[in-house]
Image (cartoon, rainbow, N blue to C red; front, top):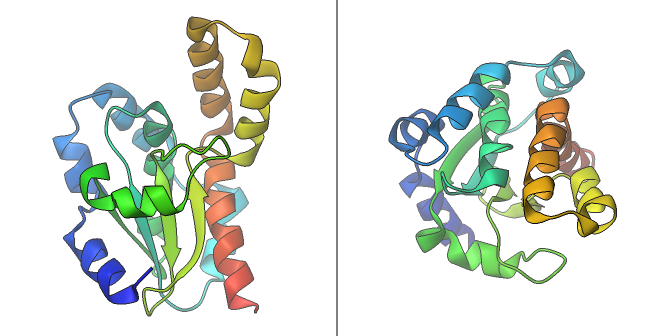
Length: 179
């Protein structure tokens, strides 16, 4: 993907505070997840040791259950670390990112979070859900009714508290730093 286009798209995106302020769908869950997502000791040490400048370009929508369960925690990472910045764009403008980075079952999904270096070159991507949840979805979650699935998925996210999502983003950044 063209770094000039990614730079422009990133700068056209919304800061998390503005996105949260404008969220209509799942508003209470967005507010609660952000409120519950304060810095976690499991990742603050890692984030404190980052160097360089990193941009998270998140394609998300307020009505998406996976976006509401991941993006607020990434917002805390960006607020905590002077090295990490985040902007959110809607699928209408971020569709090329979603199409280029599909789920394992070939869907373009939200959230799709592109990790960009200081030159706005992509170095990694987080697609839709943390890996442990993806594994659960394809195994234990596969035989549940829709209602049971949604309840269990939200319970998983609640128990995780954004830790695996933030760890995944930090893994991407640290791997790039150490290349």
